[in-house]
Length: 425
Image (cartoon, rainbow, N blue to C red):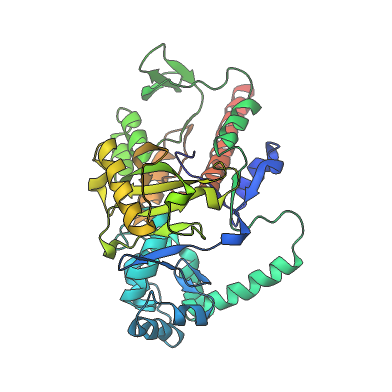
């Protein structure tokens, strides 16, 4: 079972490169090519997302025009994207505003919000397009609209696929024995004793006059450090830095977070009426259901469940439904079983359920996020040998977090090298 992310994307190279560096290349597995599609709920029915519709832009017209997900009016409004002029950027724009401007309200409510919400668990009225999906702004600028841009990208992708060499996995990959293979391999690659777990930190402070950092643990002696890298959530970094720089801590607390829960639930396959011929279902907020999405994990990747069984992952909470995160585990199990009964025709008792909670773990890249991060980094740069990493700033996915770690490590190395050179001089 995966209690956190179950995969990562390959069009950003950093996570795949890290796996290669750690000798995990032979353990990377792609998604099942037989069922590379997803579903979306409309009026309680589970319908396939139109083929070629990627997050917020279709690269094929016929599947979109024949899909029952959108009304005739909604489809005609989407086609206006072909003739509407591109808009010059005027500051930040929300996902909701951008999609309604280009594709219309129905496309936002029925397709874009649930698909993007599955990544960011965010409110589309607050989510910054520039901070999360700038490639679509670039498509509008370069090609005049999203549909033209999507067609251009699809042609380029087909050409690249034709000429590509080496391993090709599709857009998503995982590791054969689970995602924790990556973290275990990282630990094993480091010198013995260099990682300490289960050691909560109370705060960090400056150890003057040496100007070293002091890392104060909740239990045990404090640690002196030449460089400190904070890769915690922004609100946790703020708590650690309260006594060092209250203004920086205040800026960090300005990055909002959402909480989510994941329920892994397994059934005998014959208790599920739906054919499970895809990777999962996303649920639009307009449907007013209690769950955000269901991932068919045993279909998506091989060896995730024994033959004759199905393993599903159900997502609840997020920025749009925070009240569900506050329910106890038994209430979440009851909600999940009821929703699976309605949407997938799941009957009978599950083989097991496992609830995982992630409180205030998903940063929300709301309007003004890029400017907020610029101010945070400017303020943090005044504290020598302090490095900020993690997913709070420039990307929430695993590849983005790996990239942030690369940059943080280089910054720490440069700070140590500079200190060493200064001392030698």
